[in-house]
Length: 248
Image 1 (cartoon, rainbow, N blue to C red):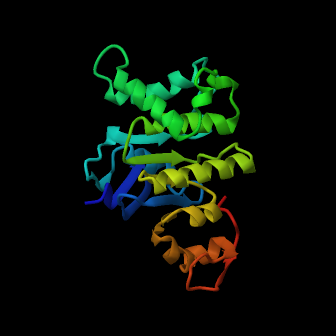
Image 2: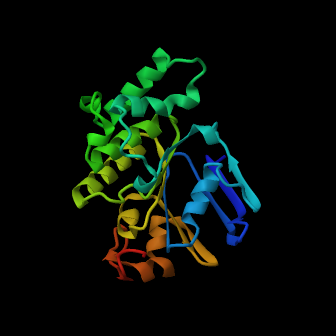
């Protein structure tokens, strides 16, 4: 069974339906990028996957031992309080709260936090104040925090927002390495060019329709042809896809 399986999913709020009839799955080891125009439902879908918003119809099922509380989550920079005076270690350690069963952090929780700090290359920042870090460093800290909540799947919401090109590429490379090491990734992004470079699968939300499939299939679909202009990375194709680099 898939980690996450959405069937005929319908989501929205009191003021109306955002999308409906959406079906897709996220399997172990995949790297899914969710793309689409503003207002297409990316954030609503993400909240649904995290269990923060209930579906109006259809279903979201979890399998292979994955639970909603066992999903690591890295929110948008705009949703993060970057001025709180906690140390890097304290921020990362807070990611183990779903494992907490006693009033104080256990040795195992501390071990998990230190292991994930090492995993993303921030052990040397352990005692630094989070608010004094650069944007790229803060994202690494929050990625380590997200990893403390899971050994299976992380969801990242526009993780490169506000980062310069070098820091953005650095974060993309790190996420891809984590995926190759066994972490399943779901990333919400506006950057379609980077999505097709790194992701194994694409979910493109577009008004009352959507595309879901492998990156190869997306590159050869009307959706990919409309929004991409890049040399196709497919081994069996010399095609050039027309369109724009990013969704806005």
